Image (cartoon, rainbow, N blue to C red; front, side):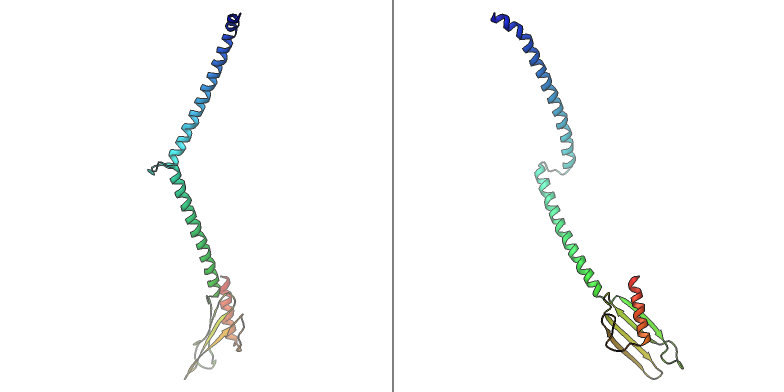
Length: 166
């Protein structure tokens, strides 16, 4: 009876083992395919670097990224400092030429305004006469001067302010 039982179950056990082997073969083939894809990606990443260890490449890339982040932060700080310095620079210039003495001469007198973003700077006026020339400098803070400004000096400041927008 034991032999009979074994003979009855033997084909079922063999079929089960066969199905299990077929399933394992399919799994091995799928994993082999995935491994080939992974190897191609690995070779594409490693390229012709001559480095065989991925850890070395990743570590090197991490160091490079950290270095570049430091440089980027430094560049941002430099740009902010430059922006602040540019606001203080007297980069807006207005020039007004005129004839100080209507009865003689031509437009040899002038007023030049040098202003920064905050309307700080200086107005320099040169008045040319027949016998003498005079040069005056008037400080400007917030668009105002502690000295009275002539219409020509105000015009030079307006010209400098107009160049601010362009």
